[in-house]
Length: 165
Ligand code: OFO
Image (tube, protein in one colour):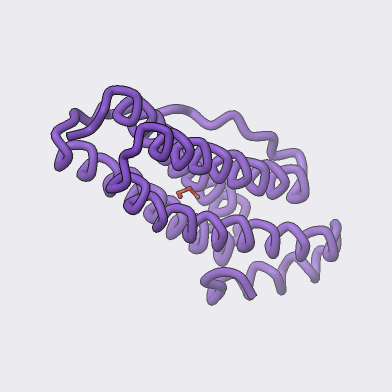
């Protein structure tokens, strides 16, 4: 049975994962409109993954005798003025998600909820990967700058990019 504070914290994370999915979805759609097919493909896939992160939490909360709260769909407020700004925001968002997961792990230990602590380890590993992926993309964007040819090649690379390199 979930304690109240753990349940509230898990429900908060459900919202954070839902927001992450929306952010990737917004970036996917933006990239598609701009003709960056590779980036769009990658971002659509990430959006689906974040939704799965949310679902996994929903099912866990309900399975442990709690009640998952389904969050409202939020409109991401992203600055699209340059690739660099856009991907910096994405990286910062993933760092924020990692902080949220760490806080959640901390609460589960405080409450001596070892089952939740165990469940959360999957998210801890996942965030290491996602932060690394966002950092790799940002590093590439920083190298390319505004070079059109570089962006074209980068977009092509993204078609087959599945994570950290
Ligand atoms: Fe990238 O947020 Fe889920 O875990």
